Length: 279
Image (cartoon, rainbow, N blue to C red; front, side, top):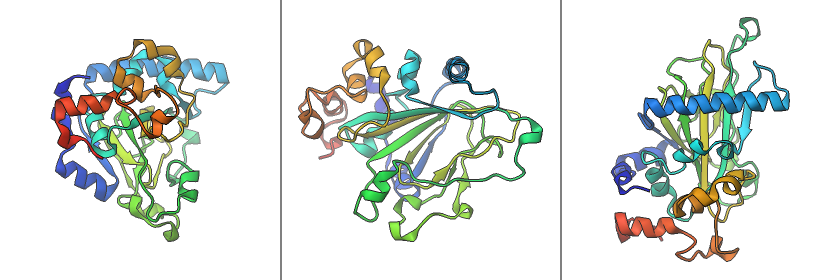
């Protein structure tokens, strides 16, 4: 990981925005050339997945653990414009615990719904039901890399309810009226708190929507995916990427990590100073 990424560290204003709204938009996070390369890989993986699993061309599919499908996806794991903001929010004892690639293809005009229907939810399912604190702790966040232009409504936009990550469990489900559409250009990244109420939406446009979601959590949280990338690519990764893909010296290495378990900690100390290291 290059020290030049420190120029993209989380700013005070970005932290305030994330803490207040539950999400943060990073424009021009990845360059056009990489967007095009990623799109080509997404199209290939999506086509192979549909063929293997019998999904038709108009079905929305959500491929879990997509990071294990192609080595190019590893590039975004510690991408310089976004990863410093991730560890700025979560600290250094982190991992990639979940990745998913939803593709919302163009639907035939006669099958497109007349209204957008939202299914607002919080990530991590049982965590929201079983953690006793109120409001609940963050524990994880996602970075969504948009490969498709969603500046127009109807392009399977992501919807979020700003500030809903601080909502108490007794407040109940969010109303659709409280959600706003995320409308961003290709190459934009959106970081969002797992607790924020959010929803996918139908694609009623003539443009297929493609987004890559990278979920980061603390290393003691059990991964949601099979993490096949660690089996296929671990020997080709540097120490920090190995940490993010789940490497550890043993079980205690997740809850009481040594320096060998968390090379990201040493990197932050060396390049950003001791003050940047959270307890």
